[in-house]
Image 1: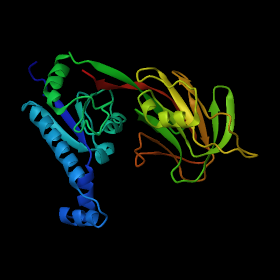
Image 2: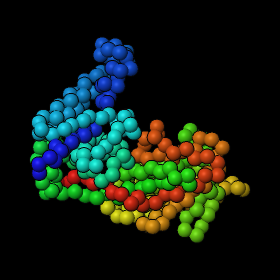
Image 3: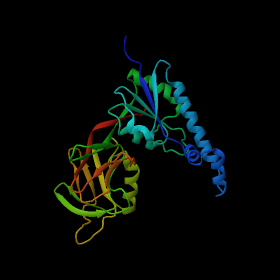
Length: 300
């Protein structure tokens, strides 16, 4: 179509273990010396760096020359401005897709797995060699896209955040979190290590570990199911706090409500990004439920 802007591909990456090691020790030589003193080597992480770099190069070379492109690190996502028609390509671990999802509004995401031997590939499903065909099918409207349900947490002052895997609510340190939990027609004052509210995508991670350890029979949601599950971590019984409302399902249209009783340190953050958190002051009310928007994951 005459006058139509060329598509823009935004490549999302994160620093590798090797890059972070050199950043800390200033040079590769000093990093190797540090590890040798501890009977460790850099061979494996150097290979990982090589695979990541090779995958990134393959993606860059597959983007048509007439298209626009940008690259953004995971740490800079909260400051990056996505455009409505962007195509997002996450090159890295599965968690990278979750990290970028909270900042999107319907843009399709292609997950590229640079290291299948280490990454499960639940969200980064494609090898680097597939990117050219996937981009072509996307712009032609022939790509298979899966709509993944997300979770949204909203404060009573209007601030909100979304997450693809789970939202954590609690104290930012290892102190106990104190709050009132309201679910359906029940309410309980609790002191715990915090709670998580998970989607079906997150059900294979943190929530699965909690479910297995406590021997729960709660059925976790599927990735495209409009349902969430919540788990209270290590609720503490006392004369003032209870342990009855520690897990449950949240259907679409329902909300789990948390009223903070923390003087300081109360937070809510999504998918492990603690630097981009909502602050919960004493008396504030947080409601968590199924988000209206969906993450558009390119699956084939």
